[in-house]
Amino acid sequence: MNDARAQAVALAYHEGDAAPRVVAKGRGPIAEEIIARAQAAGVFVHSSPELLSLLMRVDLDEHIAPELYRAVAELLAWIWRIENGLSEPPPQ
Image (cartoon, rainbow, N blue to C red):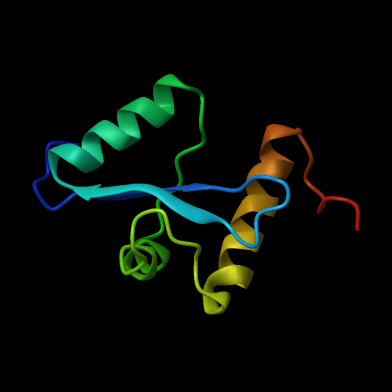
């Protein structure tokens, strides 16, 4: 990745949480480290410049804003389908 402009945001969501929260974020070498650690841990890494730009505005350890719920929920549902080998949406 070796781009000083690289950016990364890591989200976490645990049952009972009001919403996902930002658990790590950074630019340049910090972003590269976030991505490397995620990949090493088998965590899915997704590239979405538009969503990244919005998530970079959220303070560290803060929940995402309600305006981002739908976009993040759609991304998490898509990841869930990929991880479970499904092409259809998850059961309602």
